[in-house]
Length: 338
Length: 277
Image 1 (cartoon, rainbow over the protein chains, first blue to last red):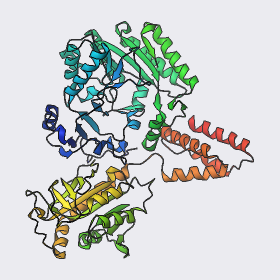
Image 2 (image 1 turned 60 degrees about the vertical axis):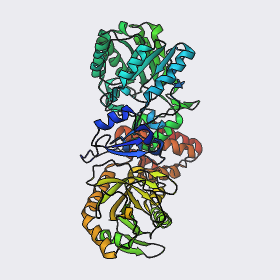
Image 3 (image 1 turned 90 degrees about the horizontal axis):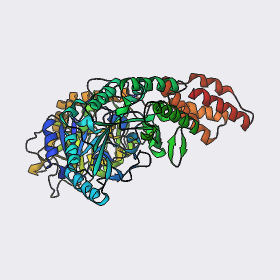
Image 4 (image 1 turned 120 degrees about the horizontal axis):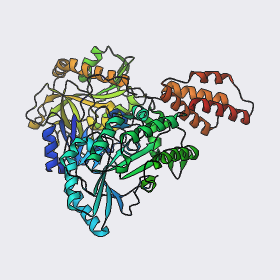
């Protein structure tokens, strides 16, 4: 879609919009100091920018702005039926960051959000307070903190991980899951692994990464990260999700990928594996079609109960193929199929 | 197409000369144009600006205007003592003083322009608070109306400080003075316009007007149902995204006239299969 990559494109976060209430938070001050050359614009409410109806999220990806806001309500949500719950009854997710700098063509964020600008909610302490109340009500909570973003890619801007690590360490009632495609494994060597903090690496065949997961680390980098952290006893999940149908050659693509995976990673050390084919609420897909230039968006999906996904035969074939392969190397009870 | 709105004629004269625009309309608004640009002189105030914005943008093809952009250009007052007369700013926030509604351009390029915020106000003679750095009487309504036609990266406000509004002396500015301060900044405005044009040209939507026209033609020729036409559009996009080119083989189907719906459906299935393969 973008044919030109001229150097006059503004750098990422050339503009930072800050809610007036958010200025006093230490995170805001930390970030504004870090981006001293950015234009800072005071706003009343992050939705003034984020929820404008006439945005083109695909063009915004060229130079996303940063929005610093204060979260007022909705500090956590019950997990979606389209996400895996790891058979955890009290499965929740939280979104203190909205949007991502990776460009995965199939990502539901492009259909869900009206904007590609990145939002940081800077009142993390309020999140911790509300989640503590939830833990005391439920005793045990499984909390995904990286669903509406890949939070680890923002570590260079603010050390969010450190905050959540310390929170998990103090609260054994919560298990935190961080899902990522990043290759940022060295960061974790500064920390000791803890049993209630899991890292879930999303992995795909190189062909899928090259074609549909732009700006993300390649497979090798992701597997290197996984492998190094397994050696240091981190609790690691793998997410082969979404499986993408790449045409008639998909079987070969995924066979080579799975073969490579088992040669690089000792699966016995993996905590769990989730497998799922691409699926998306149909209204998100409809919006993505307005701007996208990716074939993954225009595949003739079938819609059941407002969720678009591959026709049943393709879906079943892909899941069976991948799961059967994995079962030869990995405890089938720890493979979660969506 | 580049759409420009100025409130007053002296604000427009520099651009009219620079882009060799010809006067094409006198009423209800003065309009000057060339092949690639339309400039409207709205008159002072938010209502005039809203009406004139709607007037020139109504020509824009709303589904295929990704290369178009709108610029509200003109003079303004400063409410900030640090700013001086003659300085030009790209406005990164436009506040409507009366409704408190805010508008923001998505500034995706590095421009050689300083940025400031602006508030648009109904009457300069009234008592008002200084909420933003600059003050004018058109930007917010022009932005609001252009937002119905264009995306946030296609709408901009560029203003030159013509008076120290914080002094509230409401001195009348001479035409000559306005011409001079615009003239001093004209190269920067041209650079701003050129950069934006170049950028928007480099951005192409997958499904373009010519694709839509072709789908329409083929649908009529094959007597496709509404649902089939929608499916054809999706399959066409899949092919174009996948192969990086238009499915030229479809032209063969333009001369086929199915005799009945059974034959039409068979041809349609054949087309879909080819596009998705």
